[in-house]
Image 1: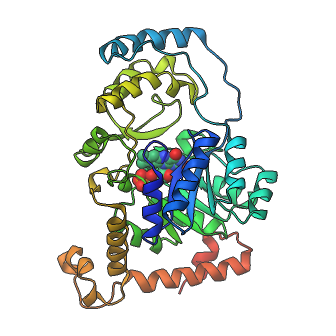
Image 2: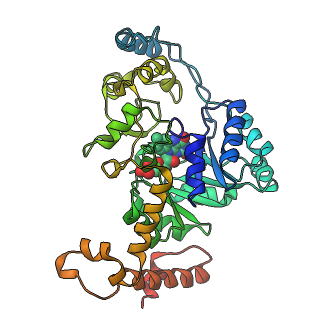
Image 3: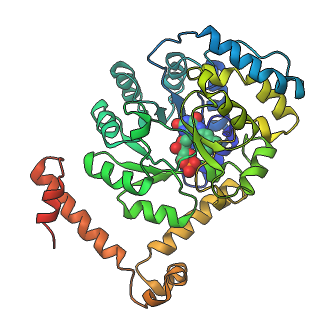
Length: 390
Ligand SMILES: Cc1cc2nc3c(=O)[nH]c(=O)nc-3n(C[C@H](O)[C@H](O)[C@H](O)COP(=O)(O)O)c2cc1C
């Protein structure tokens, strides 16, 4: 969670029994090393370092667009005393120099966004004992990551906060909701799948596990934790967000991302026609964001947030992990008597003292998928599933 993650947040999550992560994409190699050592100082448990892969196309400057954006952004720079609108730059560190630190420091888990590391880096990471996970937003991307040798795949549904991890599909074909995406990826690959996008509490976790996920990744839910690196004004907005506030747009960074609407989004939307590539577009507002952050002005901060934002709660990371586990265990319990949350939320007509039907049917379906897989060598077709119905 670049921008919102801290060493303290990652360590607190890992110490609580989950797998904490640090978004290191905008860290220099030295900063990254410092963070890794700080995490290790606070926990002896495994943790993740997340990095963006470098873009494949070089930046092609469009002078007219850069000039138009500068003109559009000048008044708000003056309003916030943010100085000049800067020239566009490639904002993020280079993956190779960052992953070199990951290797030198024997980081337990690397997660990559926008694809999988290339084969030589994968080999080096594996030889080092580092597990590699990567994000897919379509079944095709998941297959690609599996063949690249990742250890697990994050199935990132369209509800997710922050940047879409899309790397091989057109943006308009990769907005698949978590509930549709997870089981399709589970059926398509043989590595564990981690569900992400809109998962905010035990209900989301239980649902993801029922869909076949082996775990979940949660971003938005952890932003308001006291260990956060997010600006307090951003946290206040998260905690008071209304339905529809978390929108998907490419105008803020140059790449599709979900965040809360504010004046920054509104202004950049008016100049969509002059949008630069990612991350140059994002770099144009770096002085503005710094000035906004210094005075806790949420109107000019990118407030990355998922569609589940209204379910955000402010509590320490360890307490949040503990609550999430308790909520999910309660819901997943086969005994409805010991799972009052299930009974209380079920429609009146469906309330019963028997176990939730979802558990046996999920087990049945899992058995059918496993049988179909054996027959079709991991290529599970709908026909195979239907003809094998019980
Ligand atoms: C504040 C914030 C920052 C994020 N930064 C990153 C990042 O740097 N790298 C990354 O792979 N994903 C990033 N994400 C996406 C998350 O990894 C994850 O896919 C997403 O948060 C899941 O959806 P949710 O926000 O609904 O829980 C970020 C998400 C948020 C909310």
